[in-house]
Every structure is written in structure tokens, then in C-alpha cells.
Image 1 (cartoon, rainbow, N blue to C red):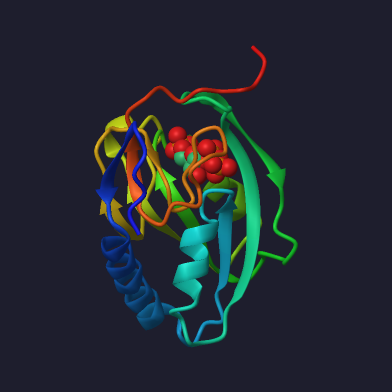
Image 2: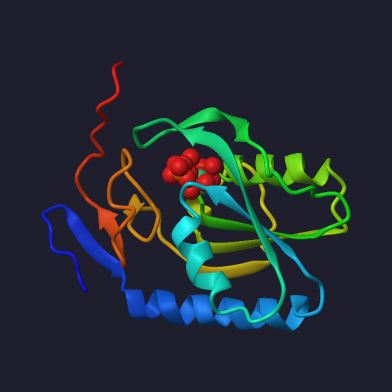
Length: 184
Ligand code: PRP
């Protein structure tokens, strides 16, 4: 189902997303099938990707989430990253796979990875659906990468602008400015 709306340009159709998620699942299955990994999704953006990915994995695994702030309600990063919600499951000694929808400046993911590493996991790898290297401000080592994307503002498949568009099954370029309802 393609979503037609002024200001949205289709860039990654859901068929390409599905093929990409399937490839990532195969790579992760090979490495983790006997390791009872702990998948930690970075909310909110990763929830659609994580939901699709785990349903392609047919071995024991556990799931938790972490919430970190990087963007405000507009298009720019606030620069500072804060962890707002911690995983409830202990990370210590676990084989952790961090699940992220998109790495942009890298601030969020780098901060989350550093934060979780301090909790002494047995191992920690990063799985990212979309990488936007043109915007990088902080280096991030991506162990499982879906697709590299251009320096455009993307929405859909979990990615938002001011909390909208997360439900779209494809990924779109948002050509119009991302309006925010938050008071300035
Ligand atoms: C988005 C996305 C990543 C982060 C990437 O999350 O889900 O977590 O930005 O940006 P960065 O590489 O510049 O840090 P956002 O903070 O917008 O929150 P959300 O997941 O709730 O949409």
C-alpha cells in the first residue's frame, strides 16, 4: 500500500524493507541461534522494525526497550542525549543486540551503546535498519546494517515527524518542513 500525500515522496517501498529485514534476520540467526540474545529496541522509532525482525527469528530470545532523547519535536537534534527509560531485564552477562531504526548524527545510538556497555553485557552488537552517514557527528559501529540512505528527512516504518507518519508501511522523504505543535 503506497501512501499518497502532498509532500511525501516514496523512497523505500515496503517490499524492499521486507527483503532487507529478512536479510538481517538471516545474518542474526546465524550468529545468535544458540545464544538466547536480549534484543533492546531504542524507542520509539525502532518498534516497527523490531516487531518485523523478531517474527522472522525462530529461536529463543528476549526483548526489552530503552528510551533516549535526541530530537525535540522538530527536525533538529537537541544535541544532548538522555536515557529516559531503562531496560527492565538485567543486561549484565547477556548477549545484547541493540535495535535502531535510523542512525543520523549518531548521538542517540552512541550514547545508548555506551550506556548499555557500562552494564557489562557478555557482548553487544548493533543492528540498524537505515544509516544516514552524511549527518554523522559521532562515530557509530554498525554490526548489522540494512540500507544506507541519503541526507533527506525520512518518515514512515516507525520514523516520525512530530509523532506523525510512524504507521506508514513504506519509508518516504518528507519534502515539506516538519511542523511542530510544541510551544517555542
Ligand atoms: C530518532 C531515531 C533514532 C535517532 C537518530 O529518534 O529513532 O533513535 O533519532 O538520530 P541521531 O543519530 O541524530 O541521534 P528520535 O529521537 O527522533 O525519537 P523517536 O525514536 O521517538 O522518534
